[in-house]
Length: 532
Image (cartoon, rainbow, N blue to C red; front, side, top):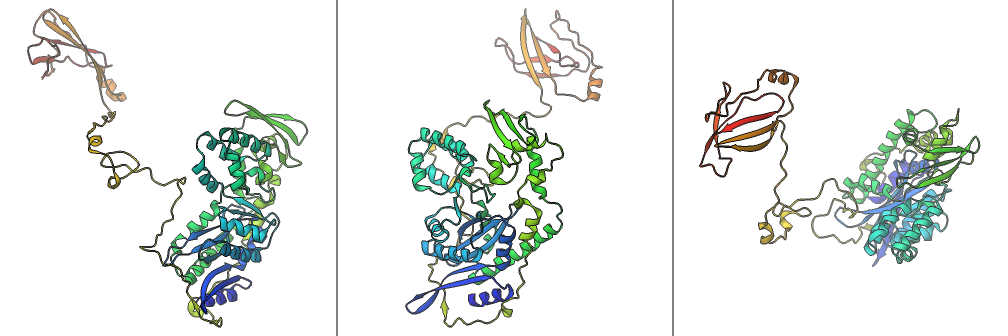
């Protein structure tokens, strides 16, 4: 079936590259690996996309084990742009070298080509062997940090991400000195085990992609996760269908665009221009010194030259989009169009060029041409795993989850569930702290004080009523202040006052006593109670 799919794709999409590699074992031909590069994707990548490729593989979740590898680019919108994909057994040097050789055959070595990987041994070996010095090789910083945390702890970790984001060599060297001071073994470890480029200060200025993580490959893996359990021929065809539909959708978007620069880029620059409190010292019409104060209270200053398209922070050269220092100076120059100072990689013209080609539709398997390779190919001898094949991708420890931590219903602690609870009986019998009382709407608060005079007890209660509406306040203003006769043992009160029993407020009281409440007046003033 794979040979028939190869013939059908090459017939419908002329110029596409479909390679099938077989391995001969004991006189029999077994399937080994496969590579697919659709002509429309390759031409669109070379015509309009940035020269950046994120390469990674994901596990197949079907009946047998295997790896689905992909080379993914990004367009002017920073959207995922699939270029090539393939299948092989394991992530070893020979398989990755074969895949990278086919990829180089398809896309060549365009100027400024950058390859971003997770720096696994087989893939790092293949990139160096196939592309040599014709491409910049970046290492995914998220994978680097996962390895770095296994060996180093403490303050050294807080300097790693700022070091990866540093856009100048001076900033990079300063942070590396802090890393060496926090952990003397950290810098030799990085120089020995992570020799690839992982800091923006070392990136090429031609690619105009400032990514330090290879997240674009994870986007592709998530995009096709529902089809990884299909047979190889069906999987290859399903990915082709998704690519065909995506290119058409992007063509519809491109046809409605007008202007020179993408609207999303202009919106991003607009948002950057808000809330900037920088000082500008002009040196010429198109250059100045921009200064300000950091959140820590430190002063900084960078030079900006618009004619040379340079800024002291280095961000403009790496990303191709103006930084905040340049945007501030733009605001001081009249009749200056900011679109003229954005790199062409963010232009609508290049976006349309990336999606100008069409993936020709194919019929179903009954319309595929018959093809005889001259031998019988047997399915690869891949070991089938025990149990039900896993569908969900295993997330790394540093990745965010959609839900919070679990709470045990047995010990009420967070981080585990009842099935795996290891709390002892003594720990379970400990009294939990009482929950905080919730404040209900309309709740009253009162202050009570007692005054003993001869055989009488005068109880003063200050009640704070809930907030009332305007109409309720007007009605309550009608209430009058009560009057009492202290000399009489029997309490007198205003008409309409009810009585109720309560516990004795005094330790010397013989038993239950009677409390008579006076009429309540407006404003929460003191209410007088005379208790015999």
